[in-house]
Image (tube, rainbow, N blue to C red):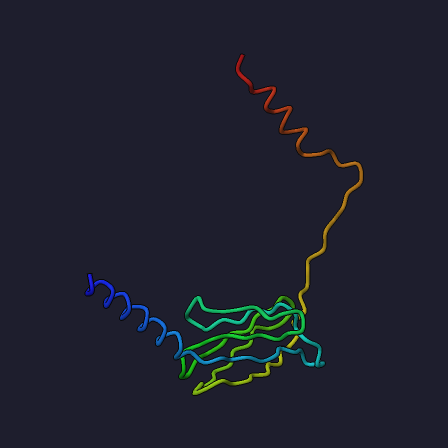
Length: 129
């Protein structure tokens, strides 16, 4: 019984020490005019670890020490990558460049029949009695 408690204590202690080795990376994301980029996503390239910025463009992410490449994405902005070498807590301020999207034109025709009517007529015509 003592061995089970000792094993559990060892597992808990090891997991706590491993999580304590992460460092805090925080910062803000702004565009070229200095306005915050709200709700941008930040993630470590090649992993599923990431976070989102708040309405003011501020973010916080816990990462393992060492060199990491961060990818910043937001709708209406070009994706930005930054490589940082983390030894301790660090503040990173990022500037994202706006990206314009061009949409193709839409033609609206008056008095066009709803395509659902043709589908229903064909279904009635081809139904089996």
